[in-house]
Amino acid sequence: MDSQRTLRRQVSCAGIGLHSGHKVTLTLRPAPANSGIRFRRTDLSGLEIEATINNLASIQYATGLAQNEGSVETVEHLLAALVSLGIDNVVVELNYPEVPIMDGSAAPFVYLIHEAGIRPLPVPKRFLRIIRPVEFVRGDKRIAIYPSDHFKVTYSISYDHPLLRHQARTMTIDEPAFIEQIAPARTFTFLKEVELLRQHGFALGGSLENAVVVGETGVLNNPLRFEDEFVRHKILDAIGDMALLGFPVIGHLVAHRGGHALHTAFAAKIMDQRDAWELVEEPLLPALPVPATAPFGSRVASRR
Ligand SMILES: [Zn+2]
Image (tube, rainbow, N blue to C red; front, side):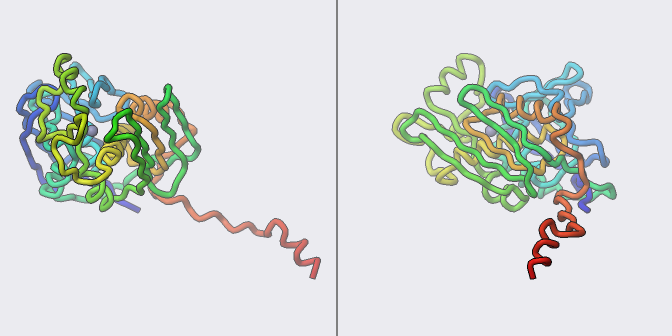
């Protein structure tokens, strides 16, 4: 049986908010068992916002949460790192309503968690195990989850752009796979969208330091970290959005052309379909019991 985990000690970093362009200080603090992941706004007298799908507030270009008159934006990369490194309980202090974008990936948060160290807590960890399929379609976007022995993600993307037509990947997401294969994949955007975003007051902190920018004839800030960095980042976003279920998921998530709106609407649907999942302390399904008599055993015996 796995134990719940928190951090060994508190740790801080500073960066800028992607959408606001503001400087933000982030501090991760150890938290007791069964307290979950909570954001705490130090600029609002310590007001707390729990990281659950019930507090979903905004999904434009990033995932935002709100509770008790407080809000926090761009939570997905940090949540992906926390859930993938098995951190069940932590307080995330922020002095501004946006998680810093860092380099646009989850790698700086993995580094921060490793700096803090991990402390097991004497309480069993719980997993959300999918026991029947759940599917969701919205136009040409599709997402589904199926029972599986592990947390696995299949993602495919396709764009009407000469440099990024189609990418697909399937991965079992355990801690080493996340750290090496997914966490370093950066946010990406298309050059023609950058101006549009800025006109609407988004991405004011965006730069070639925190996003892969795809121009008409090439990637502006090559080299890419992976040939298929784009689909890997989509997997990262989906892991972060699924973390809003509040427990590590045991199931196979399959998404096509998703984004935060699709991921979070789907997480809410899973939460609603109470017969589609169960909370368990053992991630693996127990072995099927051996039947007392094999179905065709007697017939086989009589033919001898
Ligand atoms: Zn992202």
